[in-house]
Each structure stands twice: as C-alpha cells, then as structure tokens.
Length: 230
View 1 (tube, rainbow, N blue to C red):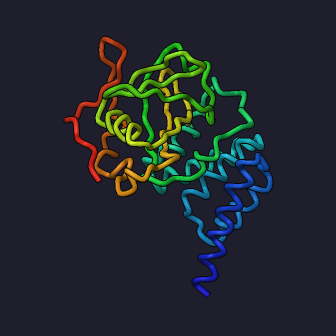
View 2 (view 1 turned 180 degrees about the horizontal axis):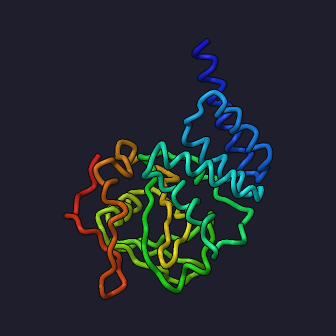
C-alpha cells in the first residue's frame, strides 16, 4: 500500500508539472491540492499551488501558500521571491507564462543567484529566459543581446568550466525586488565527460547568495576560488 501511494504521488507530481507547463492552471491547482491532501507540508507542491493561484489571480490564496512554505523552510528562494512579487506594487500585472523548470527543484542541478542592476529590473518578468555567455572564468547574462551583468566567482568559474566540458545551462528569472534580480541557473544537459561531476555540490550553496558589486559592475563572491570537484 505504501509503495502504491508513493507511485501515485510520483504520477500526480508529473501531472501537476505537465499541466502547469501547458498553462492549464485550474487543472494544475486541483492536482496540487490532491497531493497536499496526502502530504500537507510538501514544499514543491505548495510552491506549484502558489504559482497556479497567482496565474488564476487568486492572490490571497497564493500568498498563503508561499507564507506556509517560508514557515516550513524559511530560506526557500522560490517562495520568498514569489511572495515579494505578490506584495510589490510594481508587480500589479502578472505574466501568464512560467518556465516549467522553476516548478521542479533539484538542488544538485540548479542554483539561485541574486545580483543588482538598476536598469534591468523594470524589463524582466518571472519565468523569462535569459542567455548565458561563457568567458574564461566568468559568465555573462544577456537579455536580447543586452548585457545585464557579468558574474565572476567560484560558481561562475564552475559553470564556465563545465560548459566547456559539454554541459549546458539555462538561466531563468525567478523575480525582481527593487534593484535586485533573482535568477535560477540550471543544468539542462550533462555531457559524457561530466557524468560523475555534480554541477552544484552542497559546499557552494551557502555562499550562492553572497554576491557583491565591484567598481567594474562585476558581481563577485567573497570566498576563495575552488576547482571543479566531483
């Protein structure tokens, strides 16, 4: 019986993600409610339900979902940024599209980064895809061929090295808050040469938000550089 329940939940999760990626928000809402009826503190389902409520213009229900996630997991960036967007007067108009990669969290394959850019925040929307360009020890983030920022830290160095080894990464806007942009960088293809290498091991996660701006508008991490490790 326990195995059957686990399989049912796996099927429901896949169905919820599929409906959301197809923008069937009412159906996505109902499926996530079924999951939460069995696992009331399922963080991924609560975030997906919050996004569905947001797209259905049910703001108060969405806020309750994200607040519950933060109560369970205070550092959950998806809930934090969605809640900030809902509470911000600057975000009255809600986009009806969302990148389905934001609905799934695999901590070994994705990482969230914050950076400041005063000119860009008013033109970016949650779920919007950005372009990553690789430099020797840094990554550049572009929108429509316009440079938003260059990030040079141990995370950027790792992404650069793994990309040169054949990996591919996406960059998706999670949200904006004032002058701050929050993006999700995720591994979308792993090459044969990196099959045993984790893109984002846990030892770099505690530092992933500690970005600071230098005089050349390059965002740096105040930690020692680390070689790419398995």
